[in-house]
Length: 116
Image (cartoon, rainbow, N blue to C red):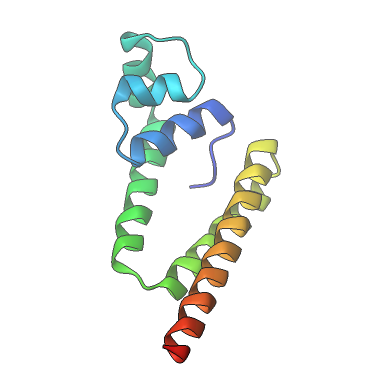
């Protein structure tokens, strides 16, 4: 599933997938505090599906090595670009930045291992 069109909904889904409480995720996404609205948003089919997808990716990332994570980030960037929305472009950019940082850190670790 591509990035959600509504950037607040996407932020909410990411926070929930990362383990944030319902109310906290709702507020972190920029909404005014409301338990009822947070519950309603979480139960919307596209939002619930996106949360489940992000949780699956997170679970797979926990089991994967650094190279697999970099590949997943690049796939996420490609999906974000395909969405052709500001939120999708932002997601693509952030995924590429994360992949670059991880690759750089991995190279640094390997370099340190060779010298010590």
